[in-house]
Amino acid sequence: MSSLRRLSPPLHLLRAFSTVTRFGGISRAAEALHLTQSAVSKQIKELETWVGVPLFERSRKRLALTPAGERYEKAVRGVLAQLEAATLELITSDDGGGALHLSSLPTFAAKWLIPRLPQFQQQHPQITLHFVPYVHSYDFTRPELDCAILFGDGHWPGAHAHHITGNDVALIAPRTKVADWAIHTPRDVAKHTLLRHVTVPEAWLRWCETHAVEGAIDPLAGPQFDQFQTMIRAVQAGMGLALVPRCLVQDEITAGLVREPLADSPGTSLRGGYQSDVGYWFCYPEGRTQLHALQCFRQWLLACASPADDTAHPAPASGIGTSAFARR
View 1: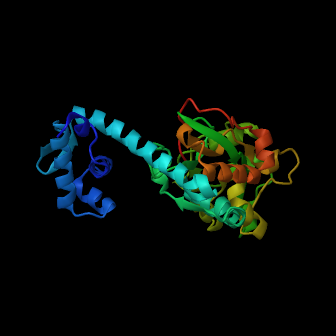
View 2: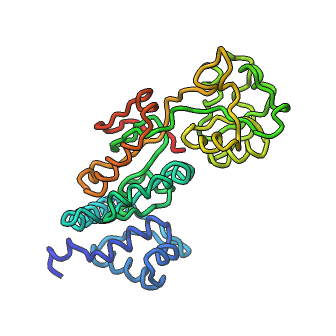
View 3: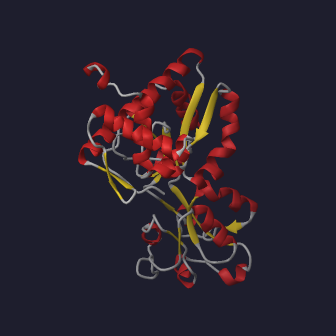
């Protein structure tokens, strides 16, 4: 083959190579590509023949990238992402429509975003939203992800971040057997089981500081949960008290499924909760900024944002984050 042609491997070979690397093996890559394992294996061998460099080390039917393969995969991943972004922009440039691939934390999507989406569909019927599994929510090099709703302090490397809501944190208690859950002052909280979110370990400590009860309550005691929705259900079941972003639990409070102790007690602040320095943010990489569908969704989403939270915790709307923060 000519030297120029050799420098431009077929796209389907590069896609197979990137997918095998991403999934760590031929079998799962074949499922993702809707091909047989033998077809994917053949494409990998064809790419290695094409470039003349071994990309994988094979041992007992297991594949591991060679050093050259690792370097090439990073470059190929970026090229594929740019190609898909360029194609999507081209598709959406004529009629203002197209698709937007979004990832969101499950509880936030179910409790806050989904109930509002019919309004977005009514305003922008030409735009289709596709939800990407949250496990991929910060890997913006993935071609199937345009933007994500993340939980943190608004700083993620290489991403624009716009604050939405989530800084107002509510203290919630079971509705049933109110007499058994008597909470008249912040110190009464120490008498009950405290439920904790595994990735917000500082929540009860911040609550204690806000209500001046440091030392009276062990902020690290109690069972842990990995979903706010699970914590809400645990409170409903009578397992204990929890601190949950108000935007996720206001419906249950209004419906009387859980109650908000200390909300009207004298000497307490923030309705018995506290103001957190982390919340929910709409994030996307620089390469997606010009997507018309993203621009429309961003404008709509920020119009839905909580005014109270925005005032308490302004977003660096035009900046790009510089430090990582835990996803929740």
